[in-house]
Amino acid sequence: MSSKNYTIAMIGAGPAALYSTDKLVNAGHNVVIINRDIKPGGLAEFGIYPNKYKMKRGLRTIFRKILSNPRVTYLGNVSVGQDADISIDEIREMGFDAIVVAVGAQGTKWLGLEGEDAESVFHAKDLVYHYNALPPYSEREFAIGENVCVIGLGNVSLDIVHWLACEKKVERVTSVARRGPAERKTTRKELRLVSGALDVEQLRAEFDTITPSMVGVGQEPEKVFGELTRFAGTPLETESDTKFNMRFFRTPSRIERDASGEVTGLVCKKTRLVPREDGGTQLETLEEEEVLPCDTVVFAIGDSIEPSLGLPLDSRWSSSFATVVEPWEAHPDRPRYMVADPTQNQPLWGTFVIGWAREASDGLVGKAKADGEQGCDEILAYLDGEFEKGPESELETPEILENLLNFLASRQIQVVDYDNVRQIEAVEQQRAEELELEEFKFSTQKDMLEMVYPPGA
Image 1 (cartoon, rainbow, N blue to C red):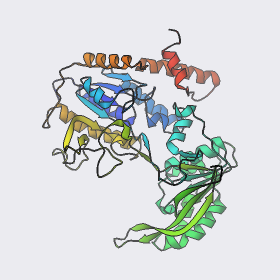
Image 2 (image 1 turned 30 degrees about the horizontal axis):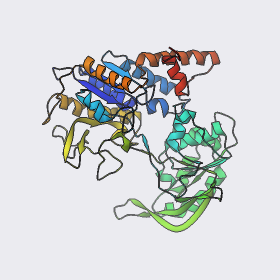
Image 3 (image 1 turned 135 degrees about the horizontal axis):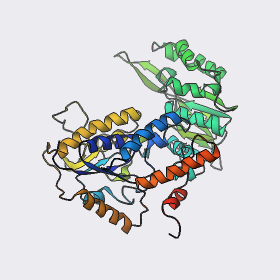
Image 4 (image 1 turned 180 degrees about the vertical axis):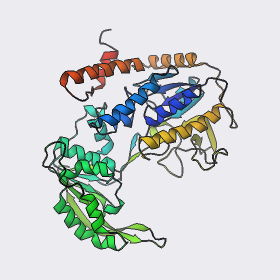
């Protein structure tokens, strides 16, 4: 362990950021968390379905303990990146000994289809943030129609189906998957929550069509059908007449619109699985097309990194930030976390990426925790002087923090500290009790900031 107490800038306040913060402060260092949102938690707060109260409360309890550590300073409502409140280069100039980027996958992944720019085409993440009361998404109106196609068949897509069936109560929602039902990425628990809306008759007809393709690669259609319909008839949490359909072996090729620009259908090419020589399967796209009638399309195909953060991109994988290629001698089998500049073939000494900022949409909270803590091993090794270069700043935490706060004040940024967050949460708890709700959240930036910065004060 280093004999000096170093000061680390942690950009982001989701699970990877907070669990990493805990490990860094337990090693004797100080962490300044800089977060885009007013409240911390990231996807643990704003990505989990709203009524999973027990899970959220458990995570909040853990995070509150971390954020209450005197070695931790929380600065919310501060965006980081190019054309943001502060850039990574400007943060570096404040005198931090290391910068850790743990902002999650803030970008959105699309397919580049004709028609994606239509008004009733959305990304799942925007809707998840909307129904979880995260400004500014919670302040936006989403024109959801009655016949929705959701592209993708993972747990996030089922969360969207859950919301569309139980809250929006649309007429029909159809999950569209490139591969077959045996390749679905959903858990039994998430499927159960939406099975009350499952159109078993439609699913039976779908299986009648796709059975030859499944049998051709050694799959058991009836077994898979039984798994999908296991909870059919389980009541939804609210009364709803929504019909939930599933379409498999369909890869979207364009979004159809009428003369006025309104979405009328999702055009898909049919696909099939074919065996590989190694015993696996691969997807083959056919020329035959089919139009799935719909008035709304939601992409639930994962997220991506946000290039506007200003970190170098990996020339091999444009969906990742560039990190050092050479294995770390201490742990040669691990991925690298230190950012690199591929144009100079040099590390960006003292700058690291962890969690979904390193590998977008990889795993859940537990995976983010593990990745963040593993990344901390490399961060601590850097601080301990185990690499070619180490920290060069001679400033202590109070000076660095003063530099940062003065800089943000000069840009008139309304910074929210952790005491302010607890103040907001206390009012929300009181409001929930008054309204006899399990939970209440302020859904506008204005409401929360006015508690911290009263008008006219």
